[in-house]
Image (cartoon, rainbow, N blue to C red; front, side, top):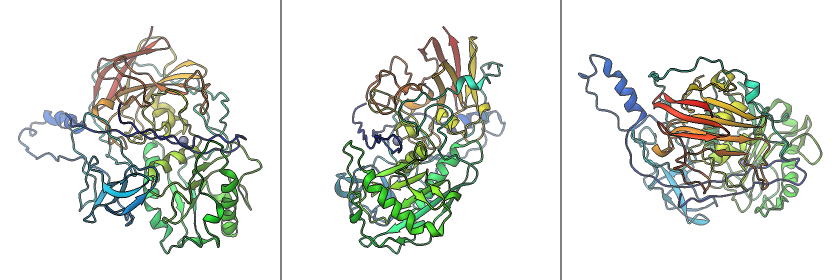
Amino acid sequence: MGGILKRLFIAIMLSTALFSSGCTADPSDSEAPDLKSPQADVQSERDDSPDAAATTIEPDPYLETEPISWEINPDYMAGMPCSGDFGWQVLGLNQDGAPAYLKCTPASSGKYVVDLSMPVFDPETRRPLVPVDVPAKTKFGYSPNLYIYPVISDREPKSALSEGSFDDYSSCKIAEVDDGSPDKSFGFPLPDYRAKLSSDFKILVIPVQFTDHKTSSKPADDLADVVSALSNFYERAASVPIKFNWTIPSSYYQIGKSIDSYNLDYEFDGTGGFWKFYQPYLQDVIDLVDDQYDFSAYDAVVIEEPRSVTDAEHGMFIPHAPARPGNGGLYSDEGQIMSLMVTGNDQNRDISNWIHEFGHLLGLPDRNWNMDINAGFDLMWGWYGAPEFSAWSRWQLEILQDKQVDCKTDTATSTHWLRPVAWTGDYQKAVVIPVSDHEVIVVESRRRQGYDALLGKESEGAYVYRIDTSAKMYQPDTKKIVDVIAPARVKLGGGWAMDASLKLGESVTSDGWTITVKETGAFGDVVEVKKN
Ligand SMILES: [Zn+2]
């Protein structure tokens, strides 16, 4: 695909391997018009009803999308000066003061302009107006991602499904092989010291201001977009009850020093040397509030600075998640802090990055950016435009339940029904085929629903990918830690392969297995799995 902008930053490995830090890469691409929608399928099912023909309701040309419920930062306004090296969209205000996606042009030091490639908002409801028709091409955009409420179709496929129980899950939950990144894992289980999602996941925010950055803003207002988007993203990805409980003080703590005095103006240079500056800063912040909080009562800590702090002053967004307790970390009266987010490089609020880096606190991995990998989907694997978690990441997090996965361990040809991965509820979402004790093939269904709201027709279908937990995450390797298994028509290279999902009748073969789409619809995809 042309025009992809790939940003590769912070894929940092500290030499001690004790600390982790984040990494993202982001693409961008454009749009086009289209054909037909999931709604259209639902509508046609209802035509069995005798009244259907008589009822002429003008169809809503827009999908039900999530409205923006928080105050938009008034500094994000068309025409105003901007900076922030990401340069993607941020939710702001147009010249009339109505919500709009803005871009900073040029990215480094320019002005906000309305991004005309993104949906506009209904000024009354503050809903993004996403057309019912699915466009042909997948678009890239974020911060925050659009959300289309999933349409759970009651239509069922006609294909006969295999009766097997497919429940030898231990064969599919491949173990991690040590790849030098013990704080993250593509395998099972996630690393020991990582935070675990729960129905009462407690996040402590420590807002801190400086002599050169004072604010009277309320931290909860400044973070309203993050709190809403991050909570919703993880809670919606889960088919088990997940709830985030945020503790956000009513004002910023004053640290009594300038932010400049901490030398956080770190630009990634491959040395990983940032920690010698960040560690003293973060420890100062913890010391400042240590008397007031029992740190052992929280699953994760977020340190947040005033919105006026620039990327140049505070250059790093770091998920601090040591592989194991030890020296050189961050400590409260209650002991070492094992899950903490440092939220720099966020001058233009980058909510998808928050969600991605938070995933590292939970132990989720990155793709290997040293390798020619073309895995398009999953916020953790780098594509922020259609960020719904893969079924694999969900299963690792235990927010996809075993019963929602078919673990294919026999050699008989079998047929499986996969619901769109963005559907809420405990539906069947994946087939996993173990290839060895460290390799699996995964098949899931992608639709323009949920956070995949910018998915085009080219990306809808059965998505097949391969995981090798023996491959390295951050160093050149002969093996690929995750990669798409794409049909022959797909031109690989460029990192994303947004058109790799299998359409009706298409198949791919890998590791002696052939996966074929036998039926497709609003219900998802029915795939046949055959041993060659
Ligand atoms: Zn990352």
